[in-house]
Structure formats: C-alpha cells, structure tokens
Image (cartoon, rainbow, N blue to C red; front, side, top):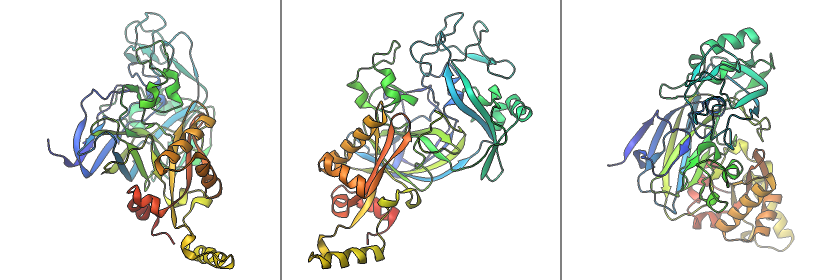
Length: 435
C-alpha cells in the first residue's frame, strides 16, 4: 500500500505494544499523523482489561523506515480537549494483581485475570468486576484532586466535593474520552483532597515514540518502569538483556511539547509511531507519580533519517526550554569568545560553532538513567564518556524527566559532528544557524 500524506488515528492498543500486531498507515516519509489521544495513567490504571497501565494509539507504519534508521517527529500542535480530569499520588491494593498492578490485574474474589468492569456510582469503590461484582480497582489515591480547565485551556483549578462528584457522574463527557477508548474515567473516583489549587496549563505528550522490538506493556516501555518486567510472574516477563529492546517512548518529559522535535529509534520495520498520555501540565520529575491526564488532538510530522542508528530518543526542545548553558551562542557572545581567543593567541577557527542536543536516558534509578543518557550520547557522537560529562557540565545540564529514572543529558554539540550525523538540518531549523 502506498504511503498516505495524512493518517488519522483514533484507535488504541490494549495496553501492550506488540510488533507482531498490524500497524495503521503507512504514512509517507514527510507526511503527517493526526491523532485523537485518550487520557493516560489513571484511567487505564483502573481498567483491568488494559494490560499496560496506559492506552496509547495504535502504531503507524512510516514508509521507508527500516531497522537501524531514525524517525524525526515534529510536534506540530497539541490541543487539550478534556474539560476536567483527576489525578494524585497512588497506592496499590494488595491481592488484586499478579506481580504488577499496572499490567496483570486479578479480581480478588472470582480470580478472573484482566476482568471487564462496570461502573456503579462514584468514589474509589465504583469500579466493579463484570463477572462477580467485586471491587476490583488495583490502585487507590493517597492524596487526589479533580481539576477543571477554563475554556481557553490557560489555567485549571481543583474542585471541592460537590464539583468533583458532578464531574464524576458524567466522566467520559468531561474528560472528552475518545469513542474507541475502553478506559474507565478516573474522575469517577471524585477525589477532592486539594481544593482551590490553581495551576497553569502547558500540555505535552508523556508517551511519544516508536514500537519496541518485542511486546512491552505500554507504560513499561522505558528503563525505569521496564525493570518491573524482569523475571516478572506474568506473561509479559522478560530478561534484563531483553529490556534493551525497548524504545523509551514513555518519557514523561515535559519538553516534548508543541514545537519540539523528538528523534526516535527504528527497531521494527516501519518504526511504528505511537503517542498518548497527554498531560495538561507537569513539573520536572513528576514527583507525585502522576499528573493531569487529558484527551487531546495532536498533529505530528514524520521524516526518516536513513542509516542513523540510535538506541533511545533525542530531543530538540523549543529554545525556551533549553538549560541556560545549552542555549546557542548569540552573535555578541561569539564576539566575546573571539576576542578572548585573540588575547590568548588562538585562531578564531579553533572556537567551536555548536547547537544543542538533548539525549534521553532511562534506568532503574536516576543515577542509572544519567549513565545511560551519557553513554548513548558518547556512542552516537563517537567520543568518550568523560568528554560528554565535561560538555554536559559546562555547556548543558542533566534534567529529570520522571523520577525515579528518566533524564535528559543536554549540551552543545559541534556543528561539524551534527553534519556528519545528518542532524544539522534539524538543529538549524529549531535554533537557527550557529553564531
């Protein structure tokens, strides 16, 4: 089938990214993906028939993408459609899952695995097993809130009990849950521990990436959540070595927002671009474990970079989101550097011209994630790990995407190196010609 200029997506996986499943598309190299995404964490977490903790879009085949290539994704637009949502810190409920409450939910009374559910009333006991009627929710809020948004999606405020219960009674409507989504709306729980808290919206995609080389529960397609799969007691268990087949699409990095580029590894034919877990806002680290999951409309543009093999995502954030030290040099700053070089009898040509890249690293801990990001950068750029450490220290930063184990390693990269990797055009498009 010939690639399409635009692929519209409104179908979702059952919680598992499986490279053997048929993909949508294909979309042309240079074409667009427009998706109506469904909310991420909490809704799927209380929907036991979903086997991954999220409900991401069905992957799209990108024409011409082969294993060992990279797919460059421009995030052209993100528009929140939810009117309200709910979130908060979680605690698993023992006896209701097999090893992992995100992946393998078991009814505590009839023992049905991955049971279908029905909603009865509102509150944290409202999700019931369709087989026996038992309370089957594998998670509870330790501290939760219901948040409504203004019409322009500029701000949100957390509601009191009356407002939270009003939203709960019409959950799918207030959350604008897409028609083909099967998740239970988390607003059904009507949490209201925080009342009157105001927050700014800055929406982004918590999930954006390519299909892993083996089946992964969608929320576990990352080096931190993925460690829960190692020697797990359920059917999606894998070995520590097989964890390397992930693509780290579950980043929860708030810089993956409108205007950014995300470069993703191709580990299966066609790449299999998927997205979801849109958040209305999130501070670095997502320290509560969850944030404001929302539905929305996303437009992406995809391009294949032939022969560029990367192990994990690389970001080109919008300039505003760069660490101070990683921002491209201004013309005036360049002049200062030239003047200083002259004082030390150095030629102007010895001063690097550079633009930033942001390497994603993941692991069981923040230390492991940082080491992973540094090693990925060193391998791609063909330099030593200590050199990357030095560059990230004086021309960049290590920033937390998600605690406990997603970071970005950002620093200025010489333009000559970017040219060899065929990344200069993307860096120049994003940040302009280096001074």
